[in-house]
Length: 354
Image 1 (cartoon, helix red, strand yellow):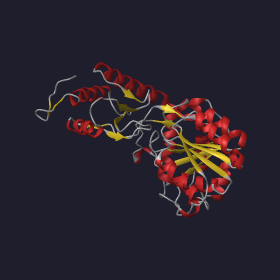
Image 2 (cartoon, helix red, strand yellow):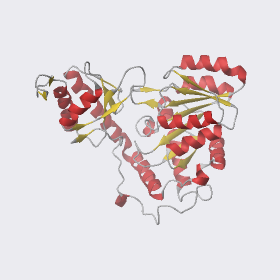
Image 3 (cartoon, helix red, strand yellow):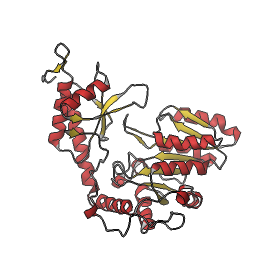
Image 4 (tube, one colour):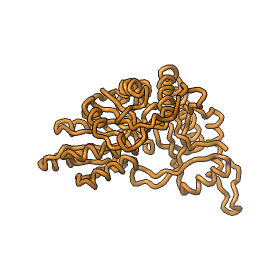
């Protein structure tokens, strides 16, 4: 069975023998009392990678966004959330809303509408907080971070990015959206899981030195929840080491696989969204996504169904990683061609390539 459902884009899996040994998974102490050993040095390296002044490790993006929006809710702010924002950032925004923070949604990546909303609301005297995914893997488009900043920076607001998808894949050295778009600003806050591109089950919050110091001082989960395990931190350290030495080579190979997939689809009269990002969503006509997914599964190809970020319905997605071979890509395209030639009279796959 060929599997196209994993988001380990760079193929980093970190088997335990490959990691630095650890005396225990945890110190048993919350991060507010004692950060995990080695976490400060790692945070500095991560901040430099993503283009921020300072960073701090967090157990997961759920912990991160729960705490971050709880912190921001203590100020007089108004939140503007991109309607395409991922669920976990939304949960954090819902916490702020429960504390009385006004929340507006704006159309996906629509900077003009956002500007109008902020200008209309500014007389209320609340600082604007814009929330968006740094990169949308479904439509293959980036958030216009520089434009967002133009609208919030004059009001001392923030742009909060969930940059989980871009980290490790986009930007110089895989640093993510800020490095990719050439943006550097104290008004940007970046939250990223390392579990996809870097294969380490933990998250990092990055931003200005003042914001990160405040987060570390006032965070609830740093007091009441466990920090990232020492094993996860060692995996993250190893991921950054591999990224320094081999990351660009891995990303080049990943792009080659995506090109091969797109060329194969074009040869059978199909196409996909996603640009050169390794999440490719098919655009077949006349077939429901769930039906196509089931047909591909019968042909030995495991995929996922994703909801579109705009008005378009569900589609079948292929998550391509450097663990795939060129032959795997060719086999997947061949299976797509077969799945599109389903014989309704016999209720069987005909085996005829389109």
